Image (cartoon, rainbow over all chains, first blue to last red; front, side):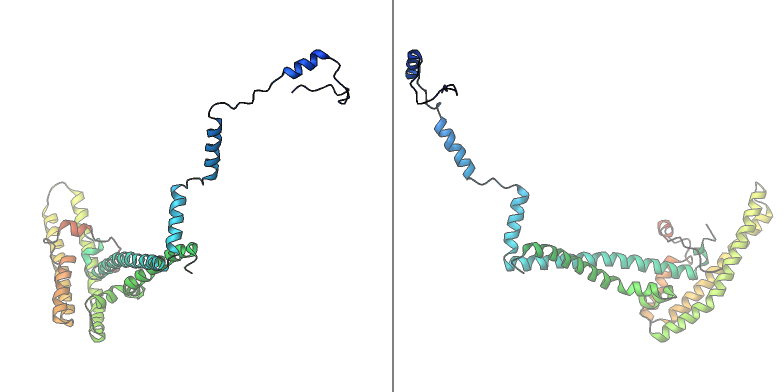
Amino acid sequence: MPTEPESRNPSLPLPDARLRRVLRSWEVDDTAPPGFGAAVWRRLESARRPATPGLGEFLAGWLAGCLRRPRFALTYMALLFLLGAGAGAFRGQIRSASTADGLQGQYVQSIDPFFAGVIR
Amino acid sequence: MMRRPLLILPAGLLAGLLAFALAYWWQTREHAHLLATPQSELAWLRHEFHLTDAQFDRIAALHADYRPTCATLCRRIAEQNDLLREAVLRTNAVTPKISALVAETGRVRDDCRAAMLAHLYAVAREMPPEEGRRYLGLMLTETCVLQAGRPVDAAHSRPEHAHPGP
């Protein structure tokens, strides 16, 4: 909207009749563009909806929810304990067999002169 | 506790690690103890063939008696090998001297095998009969007594340690 010069007193009548006519004929076109209302509602809806969580966030939330259940938490602890024990026993068995082989070799070395590498 | 999933998660992992360590220790404790024993090879023999204290003491005495014999045989084999190597490298054909040295090397090896076999029998006799048979069977596979019968891959799979003898 056109503004009046700052030096002019707004309570005084406009001096120019032509200017008054122009101002009276001035109309503002306030019709919204087509689809404006729908677009506004869409934006409002999307702002209201929470953002979709990522996979990690989803899994963390799911796991946290599960671990809050006592039965699941106990199962989880027991499972990891059993897995650890099984893996430890398996690894220990391999290690033990290897140690036994080494000790057997030491014994054979101690009684077998050929084992000493004298004969190659 | 059940309201704290962030604590339960690492607690489960910790429980798994603890279980692993416990099981590993349990499984290896006997052999770890054998390794820490001064004469670990004899400790292995005792463990492997379920020897009583008395049997073990007699076998340990036999072992101690045999060690000087083994050392002597080792030295004779080494000396004979040196002589043979020197003679072989000095010429380019099989001389009578080389033939004699080859024969002598064979005799020393036979003496060695016979002495070792006598020791194996003596040790086996001190064991319970079943364990004695198992001991003999294992030693025949692992030592040079049955040289020709030993599979090549088995011979190559032996650990290469220095001989504890001389």
